[in-house]
Picture 1: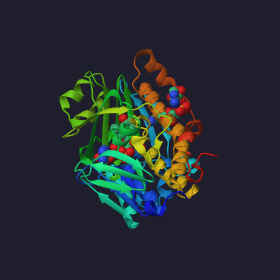
Picture 2: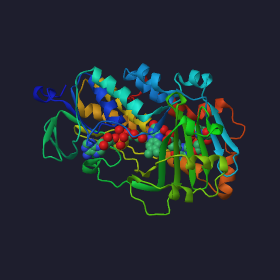
Picture 3: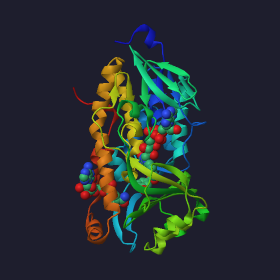
Picture 4: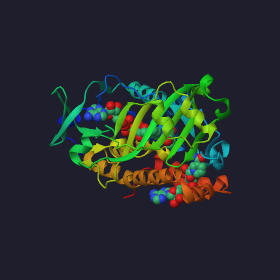
Length: 402
Ligand SMILES: Cc1cc2nc3c(=O)[nH]c(=O)nc-3n(C[C@H](O)[C@H](O)[C@H](O)COP(=O)(O)OP(=O)(O)OC[C@H]3O[C@@H](n4cnc5c(N)ncnc54)[C@H](O)[C@@H]3O)c2cc1C
Ligand SMILES: NC(=O)C1=CN([C@@H]2O[C@H](COP(=O)(O)OP(=O)(O)OC[C@H]3O[C@@H](n4cnc5c(N)ncnc54)[C@H](O)[C@@H]3O)[C@@H](O)[C@H]2O)C=CC1
Ligand SMILES: O=C(O)c1cccc(O)c1
């Protein structure tokens, strides 16, 4: 073990208390480390929206010891279903019931973000070795010997034996060590959660549902036992976008969906308030560990949402980090190299596949016709085979081979 006595007494610093940061804190606590989570927001929490969880997320929850907590709060969908938003035609349907669960050993589910964040926090707090500081935005990182020091916006310093940069798409840790630019997609997302009684009866499907149209798509699925529905609409913006969130307007959303079929158009008339996100990803990079600092979650591999895997990847990252430390006897530089080696190609595949899936969703003209024929006559078995690389992830085999 290369960690000196003095450094070993220090906590591990985690920048960011989102899903990735809290999952990392839990993985580290399970490996015996004291952890200090530094979160810029005044409170720990998640935005009011849903999230889809593939079977790989449940494999990660189990490895983090919160499988039952997370399972209790999820809604188990019967299928993923895709319709053409112009003519309502069914494009693809993938059953996610019993045969899917049997194939991947875990379910497909949808859940409120706050519920998954709470489950992770409950798991983390049960370990009693996790300190969380809110209102603490890290601004600079310095490494010396086997310590890492970060300075926050108040000028206070926090010293740790290592730093996990889980500080999201606009990561300060990544900016300091990599310095690359985010790739603003020009796609804008509006999200809202709608009460069941306000949600159209003819769309109350127990499914991860998507309507795909020229330069836009719409997503909806149930949350919280079907008492609420998550609505997400995405379009290519006419404006020059910058990554970030602000209040939106119904008029803006409506202006992008004039050719959308009436059934799917109901979705954009529902929400009383809309929040508007301009999304971004980054080009995958071949190194994200630097001495005793590393990146995790969106800080390491921000991705567009089109295969619904960003948070799932952050959960896998956290498990893999814990396993790498165990494998390397808590030797930080060695463990961080193993961690990134185990994660880089897989997460890059997610980033690139999501871009490609976005293109397929948003196809127009003849490309739309090709898209609508892509999955004709596909058996569930063939879909499951195509999904194996993604949903077949297991904690037991998550480390790269030597
Ligand atoms: C529209 C949309 C739909 C999505 N749907 C899905 C889905 O269905 N399934 C899925 O798996 N994923 C989905 N994702 C992706 C998922 O939301 C993200 O990948 C995931 O939330 C990333 O978690 P994170 O903890 O890495 O980053 P974040 O959630 O961004 O958390 C970073 C945290 O760090 C804090 N922070 C930032 N800078 C600093 C700093 N300097 N100092 C201290 N704290 C800081 C922030 O306040 C924040 O709390 C979707 C994303 C979008 C945009
Ligand atoms: N949500 C829904 O209702 C439906 C979703 N699907 C999606 O389709 C997938 C299954 O379809 P397949 O064609 O068998 O899947 P696949 O994973 O083999 O590829 C999907 C498409 O994306 C392309 N692609 C994938 N990864 C890429 C990458 N990294 N770079 C460039 N191109 C890439 C493929 O060439 C293909 O055209 C499922 O995983 C599912 O996500 C399909 C039907 C319905
Ligand atoms: O919010 C989601 O779950 C989601 C998943 C895929 C595409 C999309 O636009 C949104």
